[in-house]
Amino acid sequence: MDKKLKVLFVSAECAPFIKVGGLGDVAGELPLKLKELGADIRVVIPGNRDMDFPTEYKGDFPVNMGWRKETCIVREIVNAPVTTFIIDNYHYFDRQGVYGHKDDSERFALFCSAVYEMILRFDFMPDIVHLNDWHTAPIAMLLRENEREHSELSEISVVYTIHNLEYQGISDRSVFNLFGVKDVVFMVDKVEYYGCFNPMKAGINYADIINAVSKTSAKEMLTPKFGFGLEGVLKNRETSIRGVLNGINQNNWDPRTDKNIYFNYNKDDVDDKRKNKKELQKELGLNKSDAPLFSVISRLVPNKGLELMEPAFEYILKNNNQLVLLGSGERYYEKMFAELTEKYPGLVSINLEFNEEKARKIYAGSDIFLMPSRYEPCGLSQLIAMRYGTVPVVHKTGGLADTVIDEIANKGSGTGFTFSTYSKDSFIRAIKKAINHYNSRELWSQLVKRAMIKEYSWESSALEYFSIYREAKSLNYKRKKERRT
Ligand code: GLC
Image 1 (cartoon, rainbow, N blue to C red):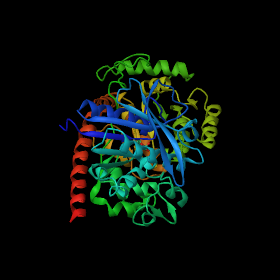
Image 2 (cartoon, rainbow, N blue to C red):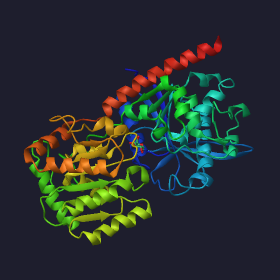
Image 3 (cartoon, rainbow, N blue to C red):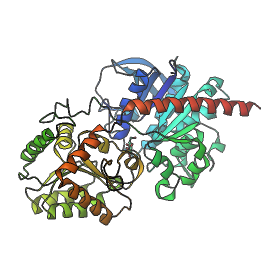
Image 4 (cartoon, helix red, strand yellow):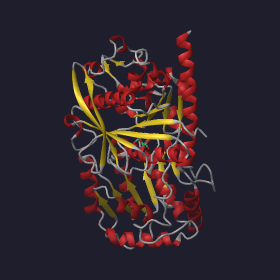
């Protein structure tokens, strides 16, 4: 094992300190596993007003932002499980919310330049800089474009993980100018995109290895349907693209020990799962019923397949099944889903919030988990659902395709139900199949058991990352050699 591999893991968010979505979970869990497996790893994230943890001052320095300078302060979170640095700046980072500010592209440009400065100034020269999503991608450009001036940078290999290709951080050329790299970099083969600056392109074009969060997503990214305009750019780097599935923290998500659920249970005692269902029905004000209880736990944003949910919910409820939804997001959908409560009292519970305790009770107490995402690079909830024996019905895309085995196509060895065509009819057909299976007690408890046994741990993902890091190092070595000759 690479005992002393030095890794700097750069992310916009990191649980438990600050988290918006799956990226935060990955940044909180993968580095920890890599550390346990022997890496010398540090994490760096931007500051945020929502973070309230004791920190220790580590240093400050001026960071170039075009013609002006901003002072950045580096602090280290005290007693973090993995050494975690925060880059602070009063103007850009002392705010609430990780994303959604109108100067986000400028904010993350400052973050990238500050991380770059930190690498030059601190006594931790990483072997690998692991970047994540568009917010951190320009660091790849800064490292490579400045290595003539700072030859030590050429030793660093860059791995770039794409969690979500749809968000690319496209901005005005003026944002590119903040980085102070030479003008010729603003070209179509590097970071220029229809006259704009595209940070995602910087990650794709400058990294040694580009990594998607599932094997299927790595392939889908190369197609117009899932490439979000960058399929051509990715195609040029096809040989350097890999795919590593995320894992879940098996100790944190465990129905045998979860303190938030009504009754703990294991794969051999699925009856105790039913007791959870009864309690959940009571708590949510649902009728006592043996009909399948469907669940959705999701941010209510379009790529989660909201337009398919509306007709599917009608189908489920019209047929006297039950449904619980937990999540918040776009107003339009919040309102639409809330109206269902009036129409189907006792059958549906709409919870427009995010509440982890409730989420756990729903994972434990419901029967069938719905996740019809239009696209889903990896997805986390389907993994948790399976671990809690809640059988997923998912669109066969990205990480959903790689983790849920369709019971219809693989009779007796499936872990859920999948549908290939993204349409309401296919989704409803898959739901019908799930209901049919549910009605046969024996088949159902076997299916639940199989879903619960399937392991998606961080251990195996982290081992794959080690091999990607090794590969990145050898590719970087080759690149340097070629440059010299
Ligand atoms: C993004 C993707 C999701 C993935 C997560 C972590 O949120 O949409 O599919 O699980 O990143 O990689």
